[in-house]
Length: 143
Image (cartoon, rainbow, N blue to C red; front, side, top):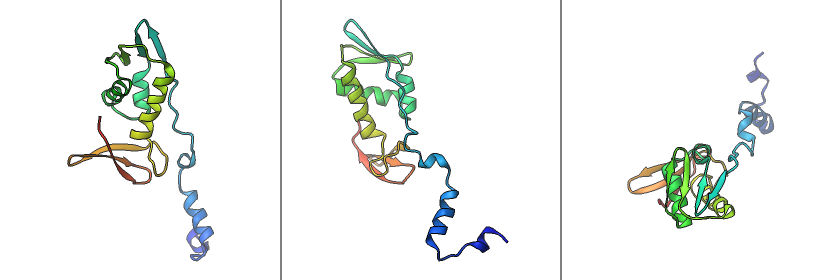
């Protein structure tokens, strides 16, 4: 006898249990999104994020886009150089971490399901954040 013959098609709990057994375990993990520790170095009047490339890869966003956001939010000039972001003023690590968290909330994390599996897509002149996990779509402001 196969599994299908043993299932009572009107037993919701049995059907739910069967469906959940076919879903990979990582889907149920809440802590699978981990941002690497931010390496901030202050040299004179410059602030350097040494592992900026790894941060951008971890959040699955373009380095230029991420850098543009941080430069705008900190009110600083700066540039990307060899996987590092160099800001042309002294910025406290707490402020930088706060701005990075703001970026995650606005451009990475889905507001519906809370997962980081999102993409930025463009439809016409509107940019949208589309969640690949739950399918939610919401408009975002571009930088």
